[in-house]
Amino acid sequence: MKAEGDLKMRRWNLWASLAVAIFASCISTFAQEEKKKEPPAVTSYNVGYRILDFKYKDESSQEKTLTTAVWYPTDAEEKDYEYGGGYAKGKVALDAPVSKKGVPYPLVLYSHGYSGSGVAAVFLTEYLARSGFVVVAPDHNDDLSAVRIRGGADANLPKIWENALKIARSEKSFDHKKFEYRLKEIRFACDKILELSKEENSPFSGMIDEKRIAIAGHSLGSYTALGVTGMREKDERFKAAVYFSGGLFWDEKEFSKIKIPAMFMYGETETYGRGILGLSDLSVKTIGAYLWCDGPRFCLEVKHGTHMTFCERVFKENTPEIAKEQVRLIKEYTTAFLLKYLNNEPKADDVLSRKDKMLTRYYYDFGIRYEVETKKNIAYYEGEDADAVKHKLDIYIPKGAKSFKVVMFVHGGAWCMGDKDQFLLPYDYVGKAFAQRGIGTVVINYRLTPQVVHPGHIKDVARAFAWIYKNIEKEGGNKERLFVCGHSAGGHLVALLGTNEKYLKEQELDFKALAGVIPISGVFKIESNLLGAFGNDKENWKDASPIDNVKENLPPFLLLYASSDIPGLSSMAKSFADALKAKKNEFRLLEIADKTHITVITSIGKKGDRTTEEIVQFIQQR
Image (cartoon, rainbow, N blue to C red; front, top):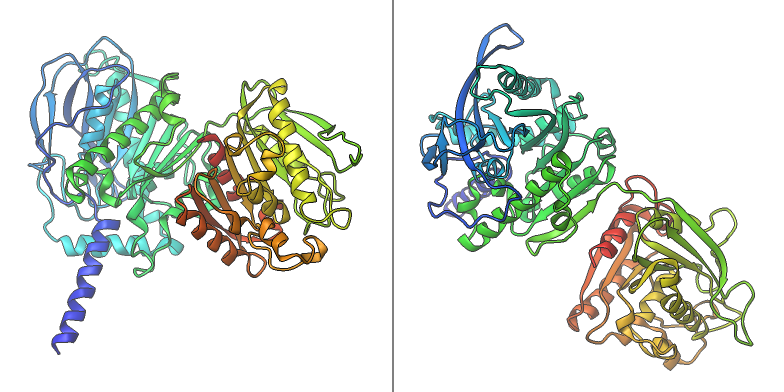
């Protein structure tokens, strides 16, 4: 009986802790009293703070109060302040006049999570005001609340957790009508603050620039923000949006409705235990949403982050050192995003175009697409044994880009088939897909079996690489940022180029010339004379096997394979990754979901394609 009781207790503890970590919003906790060192803001103000009460009628004509917190720039002296009856601590000038230095200011609406409050993320809302934004955050009229702007809250925390879990589990049958009140409330808060900005005698008179409005939200607040920026309705006033941790109650393809600049942010550990609770993988959902958005887009996975990292509980969930870094990151990237898309601030790109040490994953796309200039059938080798067809390459140039990064692509075909200009599906789609994203692309041919056997194929690949290295600067490319990518047999060849240095040395180059290697569904171990491509000499097989040539100090690798790949390729990729890890090399191994050995490559350049995005991110972040 005791064992059974212990098991029940463990299940209860797991349920409770995961429910809190995933969806409970901002349970009362004091923020650390010591003020953290702020990351630099473009403009620095003191923070003014007011609490407003707006009256409105709900769907049943019942009068409701929308208590709303407002942070704004001021020149008045700040004093210590306790939010929500002690929920959080900050420093503000209460009811102070608005600073006239930068009026009118951009506006950010903030929507909190289920059972939370407008003061859920004081570390962020205060910082935005300090950086020259007005922030308006209402207390949504949820059925239960753990904290309120004016203090006071429901003590029934188990009920809050239970309701939050029900909301999360209803993902596939989500009742959107049940939460329409939230969309109405956030729009209403926006209406009222704009009215006050227009009133001559209002303390907020002239405070807001109506053309520069954004919205942010956490958890169910993220759902609220999504709901008014295209997923349920489109409020044209919102020019950019930040979505923290979930609220993604739609199929990923539906996120093509999001046309404005969008930033998604979630915690690294948020996916832990979700399967036990019957919840979908938040990282998969968030990255999927990012992939399908139409405008400029950003997706951040915060190191050690939980669901509560994006509100004041961050100071209780990790060590002070980790919490400090998480808060710094959230403030820096959120502010940079808003400065770029509301203020057109050029300095913001310095933050948004780099992967911070506190990000375990980072995807970014400024939405820039280049026209592509193509140069076809350039000879990369002209020796006595040159082949008039197979020693040719095509260059795809992003017109107008300066010193652009370059990727060489090597096609597959079992070392005995394939061509850059092959019938039905020539590989120009690969060249154009990456060049449109600002990455110069060179698609090569190489001699095939039975014309050659190993090392004939890899010698051609090395020749092509050397030609690109020596000539790409003439086309505007940066030879110091030259990557290689290949599919299937091409994946094998680029992996071999990145592990067996002798083929580069034959071209008077070495691994320093390789910025990165991207095998897609590649072969990493040769154990037979595959289709006559490797002969019968076992020493030749070893020379041709990337896994047998792994050593320290190799170029970084991105290893991609399909969820329904050719049998054996996924396990081979994992073994190759283990070999790279054993020698302390940099690599990332990733399975591309819902793809086969063929579609993992033929989908490149298509909307929402994960393979394309992973390759682009690997290249542009190096």
